[in-house]
Image 1 (tube, helix red, strand yellow):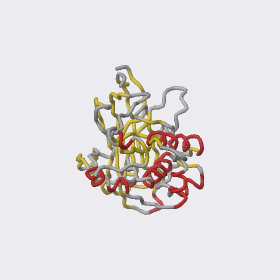
Image 2 (cartoon, rainbow, N blue to C red):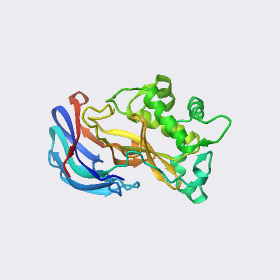
Image 3 (cartoon, rainbow, N blue to C red):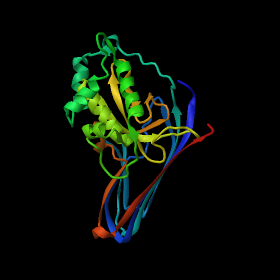
Length: 291
């Protein structure tokens, strides 16, 4: 693994209303997950109006969650998060996959299978996705597990049109497959379902992506989504089908979950007349600093 890349992530979300409204609790997942490939240097979170209470917790996935509650009404609600971090990347990672899992199909050990039940449970079973997933299996010979997943990742990058979507939710995997287009979260959910159809354990990842100057990487300027697949011997391996990235290059993990609705960057409620809502503006920047 190479030396660290020093990055600053600024995530600013502004809710606008035509008149003062009251706010319910808001949950935020802005803080990156520290680990052997990421070290959090500093973190600052500014919220306007100032919440009556702000507390932090770790959810069932060990994601860092901030929860704000409010007593004041306002016509604007602002969340402004700035984090600096050291990001260790392996541009061409090699994974020490256990021999029994190096070719597909393989069976997880009994202990792994018990722990990975939710990561292997499909939410949107569909025969079209099954056929598509099996199209990456080699004919007449052994199928390398990593080659299969690499081909699937590349096919989404090369064969689908990336479209940024601001609306909530995701397409069903079969719909993304039919459209041959979607957002990063649509592509992640499609590949998760395809991997699960082959018996592999997969989970959703939400975070940020660093886009170097003059780079063609997609997904900058907003939160980003991809997936991880559990490969015995290698652990949870990152796959970004939007950019055909395998490994953590440019990817900053914030939250992991079995499904996308469990990893929302920001979620909350407000009380007022429906027509008073004027919109949500989101600004995300990831810049490189000198270490």
